[in-house]
Length: 245
Ligand code: UDP
Image 1: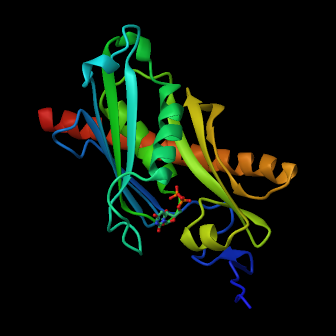
Image 2 (image 1 turned 180 degrees about the horizontal axis):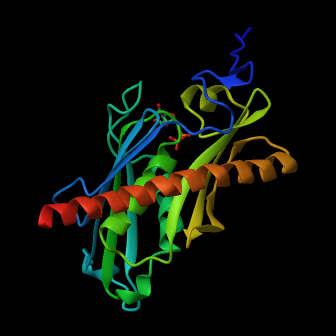
Image 3 (image 1 turned 45 degrees about the horizontal axis):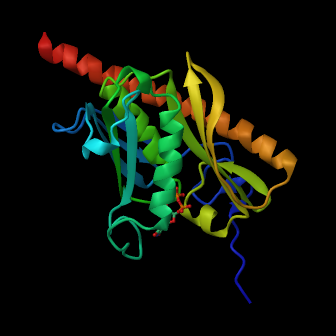
C-alpha cells in the first residue's frame, strides 16, 4: 500500500506556509552584461535566469515578418537543476512550456512597432522545485522591461495546487508530486490591475467552484509578485542613476 503523505498539518504546509502564502521571492534585474535585458529570480528553491535580445535582425532571414516582430522563447532546464539528472536539450515538456509561455508574453509585446525583427527570450532553470515555468515567466517579464521592449503591461505568473483537499498558493515540489491538482496561471497586469488571464494550464481534478477560488488565490499571489517585479526594475534604474552621479 502506498504510504499516505500528509501535506497540511494544523492548517500549515510542510514548509510552514499558510495556504495563501507565496514562497520567498528574490528578483534582480540587469544581471547579464551581454544581453539587452536580463533578470535573475528565485521563487523558493527555484533559481532561474532570463536573457532578452532584441529587437534585432531575424536569423535566419526567411523567418522575418514584414508586418511585425517575431517573438521566440526558449525554456531550458540545466542537467543539474533537478534531482535526477535531466538529459540536455529540448524535450516535449520544454517545447510545450516554451510555446505557452511565448504566447502569454507575445500578447502584451507591441510587436507591430518592429517589423522584420526578432525578440528572443531565453530562460534557464538552474534549480527547479515546482513552478519553474511560473518563475521563468516572471523573470522573462522583468528582463523584457530591462531590455526596453515596449509592452502593454506586464505578465505575472503563479500556480495554485490542491493538496489534502485544500487550495494552496505557489506549490513546492512535494505538493506538486502528491497533490490532487496543479494549476499554473499567468496574468496580464496593466496600470497595477489584473486585466486578463494570459495562461492557464491544469493537471489533476478540481470542481468548478474550486477553479474559481483558485483564480482568486492566484490573483492575490500575482499582485504580490507584481510589486516585487516593479521594485526590482526600479532598483536597477536607481543603481544606474547613482553610478552616473
Ligand atoms: N522535474 C524534474 N525533472 C524533469 C521535469 C520536472 O525533476 O525533467 C521537477 C522539477 O522540480 C519541476 C517539477 O518537477 O519544477 C514540476 O514540473 P512541472 O512539469 O509541473 O513544471 P513546473 O511546475 O516546474 O513549471
